[in-house]
Amino acid sequence: MMLLLNGRLRAVWRALSPARLTTPAAFDDLQGGALLLQSASTDVYENLAAEDWLHQHLQCRDREVLLLWRNRPAVVIGRHQNPWQECNLKLMRDKGVKLSRRRSGGGTVYHDLGNINVTFFTSKKGYNRRRNLELVISALKRIRPHLDILATDRYDLLLNGAFKISGTASKIGRTSAYHHFTLLCNSDKSLLSSVLRTPHQGIKSNATPSIPATVKNLWEEDPTLTCDVLMDAIAEEYARHHNLQNQIMLIDPKDNLVLPEVNKFTQELKSWDWIYGRTPKFSVSHTFSVDHNLSGAEVKLNMSIDRGRIESCNIEVLSDWLPAAMCDQLASDLIGSKFCPTETLVLASAHLRFCPQDNELHNKWNVLCEKVMAIM
Image (cartoon, rainbow, N blue to C red; front, side, top):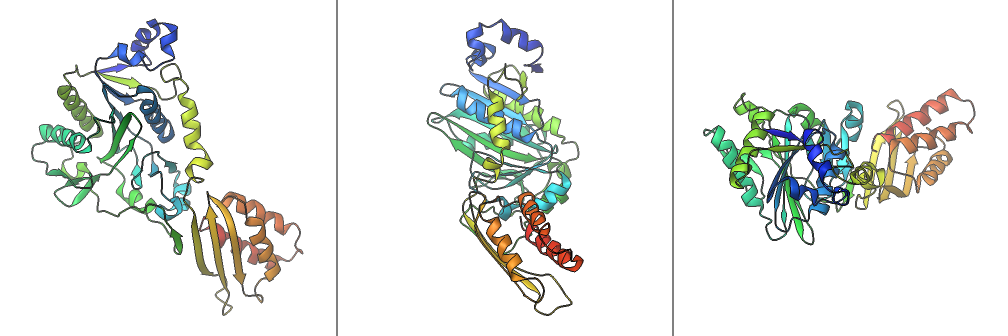
């Protein structure tokens, strides 16, 4: 049974005193020692914001909370990762796949509506990833006893001892903690493998790298395992474990009456400074051909990027192909700008306004700029 927190149950919420409406204490009145929540949103930024809000405000000292959520296509990188090193950003832009950075560590994962996300909130003392994974395994075994699922020492879930169906990450605060992980049900594996494969070579970074794995959908093992079936099973097992009535509260991460000031969390998570600007310092060394009809027409590009902005840049090109002064000016102008194709395009276009009306020169310049933007 599901209760809609921003519908019928909201009347109960509003019946609380106004002072308590602005505090997470209202959750205490709606449920006992544990909570079973599901997000009504499929937006990755809103869901990560709700997760952060719950972690910060519930302060799970004496209670536990389970949040179930799903997203439209998105790539989620860990707090200390480099997106240029982890995924194909150009393909993601072309396909409309969002990029987000979560506050927990761990590796990069792909989300879509065929993937379930599970977050266990506990006190810092009650934090136990193994127990959480065993609960999910028990839930799956209860409805499909034939499934061969085990938890690894890295706290991933494997199907048939070989196929990864879940990746895990966590965040531990001063008094509270959360452990979240994915569960592959019927995700688009073709798109998953494409967007999680970086096309870039020559990146040097100390960012946390992801570990590649062979994945499989639970649906491939048993076509009756839909996302709804899996979420219901996990909710029932959680309710059974905590002696709850199986009532899932549906929360809307956009609703500031339910989650006061949650929109501030969402806006921060959507910002360029958070998604890209938190990338650990890295360098790019890349060589590419720009004219197959001219021997030696190669561009050598070397950049260092700090906090998502270009710190140094050097562009070397054969002078018979393009004047070196143009490349030097572009390299100089790029310093301090964001390492992204949008700002580079603006700078590159500005240069053409001051160049002679030479179509061949303009075409070569556009080829160069397209090559530079392709690595961003």
